[in-house]
Amino acid sequence: MKAKELRDLYSAAPFQPFEIVLGNGTRVLVDHPEFMSFSRDYRTVHVYERDGSGKRIDVKLVIALNELSRPGKNGSSRKRKP
Image 1 (cartoon, rainbow, N blue to C red):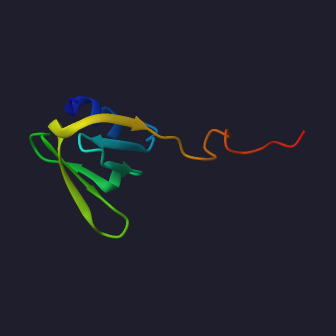
Image 2 (tube, helix red, strand yellow; image 1 turned 30 degrees about the vertical axis):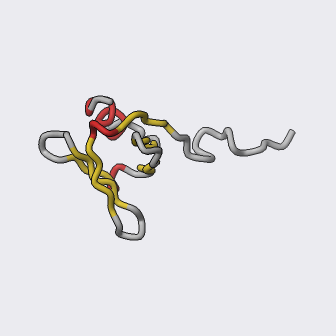
């Protein structure tokens, strides 16, 4: 997984939440760009949880990036009345 793909998701406008999947099966949610930062060389990302804890991730260990949708943003999660 290349750092460029991660940077593209991070800087997308409008931002869409995404999940980082690691080789050991760990999934890390990035639900807002303010909760993630890159090292200067883009080899490491830091993802922060809402409770204040954080994870440091080596970009070389990322095997997948899953884009997630926000409920209600595109109306797909709402039921319309006829």
